[in-house]
Length: 300
Length: 262
Image (cartoon, rainbow over all chains, first blue to last red; front, side, top):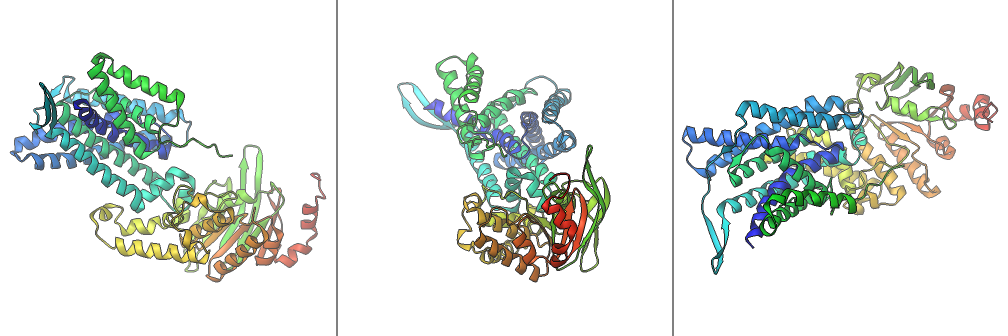
């Protein structure tokens, strides 16, 4: 029961990152390997904002969190846009591997940038929202639901709800879906496809920054390397859910979070990442299109 | 008016279009015909910015006098500024979106401008609601015109083939084009659907939109065109009214195959 709660919390964070992977893949057909590092940058931006706000004397926790969320999401969105603009757009239309290599390069650039700027040491942060509710207590086994976990899951649900509305009901979302299905046709209908792709990166980066903030709140420690592992796991989540499918990404994130938490609880913490990636391999072998993915139909 | 001058398009050693010049007058239906491989679709791709021509110029002059050098514009600007819409030989609807959404996507630019590029829409401000409603009304008018109003919320991919073709034309018309380019709109249609298509094309012309048409179905071409341009091996071999073209010996030769390809 406790593990279920922990798993869902972790899973929602992975889900938020996975949405960014899946969205970009859906439109441009590339894996944005720098996405995990945007998440890491978002996490650092959150830390800076929180410390800055504390120094300025903002004591109200909800206010500080809200300001941090806006700050981190806004700046990370700028990072996302910049990465797309300088590393991917010039390569559009070249061979398939080019943007992939560029993405890996971008990932290394971001990691080293933060390492140089912020130092390589682990950055700790005090828990902002302490306490919780004890759901049940059976013979010494307490099931804890912390306020923090509630806040994380609630934030994620809110962000995903806004995001879903954006994709399904606004002109921007419609043009994103149109680009996803047939980008050249979308262009011929007067849609500026470059701008739509740029905005996709912006939205994905903002979501990753939210995940970064939540990760910081949940674990309380971050370093310049968290983006890699979280990024690869979120990517696993996106593949598991069916890459290109938005609900699939969230579902995949939840599953990966649950698998990881249950594995560490009942088997061995040391092998939790092995478990997560074993799932990736199994999915790729037995169901490459993922749980909610649709099979690629090659057009003739 | 569309004015194509000395248009040449080469792919490596292959010259698909060779020094082609023709004009498509405003308010008319101009058909481009010719045997397979004559370069018809290449001409279309040059006009709509899919290809950048090797040489030559393509100019579109609006009724109000604005002039657009299409050979230098990107595809989405040709659609959004010069107002040229096109369809393809194969159906290219957004199959996973609803019929109505397909028509709304084509009005993207108007709607985005009304939303202040997304910002105001998020805040629920601006003329967004009014613009969205106007967009919906326009989409519904077109659905009514092509008889698909009751299927507005079905996925576009679930429509029968003939309906998909007409929906594509309606979608293209939703960008408010000055010129509509149709690549074989009658391909695969049965005679009844083909007849409905003729009526749709004539009604679009009556609205004041010029049409440029590639077509193999001579029944459609001869019935609806005001002006026909005949291509063979990338060059123009005839240009005139349907009656003139039908009597032209060069056209008859090309179609009956009195040359080395026979």
